[in-house]
Amino acid sequence: MKIEQAKADIATALPLTNGPGLPAGLRQYISDFSALADDIIKGINASIAGDQSTYDAAAAQLKTDVATLNAVDTANFDSSIQSFYQPRIATYEQELQQASD
Image 1 (cartoon, rainbow, N blue to C red):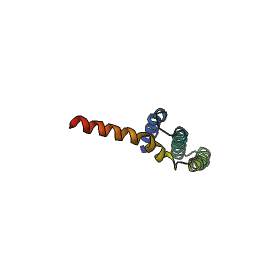
Image 2 (spheres, rainbow, N blue to C red):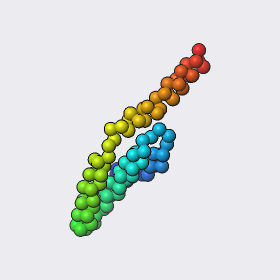
Image 3 (tube, rainbow, N blue to C red):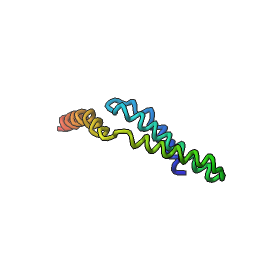
Image 4 (tube, helix red, strand yellow):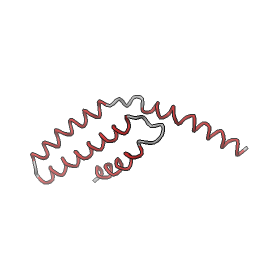
């Protein structure tokens, strides 16, 4: 299933959210995304098994997960990352140019 691959990718990304220059809220956002993936998998598995009560619980939790994700202010994520890394990238490119001249 593609969602299981997404879950694995999220698990790989989570420890990387502590990297330098990344916004503090990014770790929580990725963690919330992980919970969403878990609940999608639970809902799919319950549906396949014909377990209506587990499916209903997973569906209710999905609504909560989506609300939680929507509540996170991600507007500054890109600018925060850019402001940290862009000067370093510019310096690297300048030094690379100087080295190749």
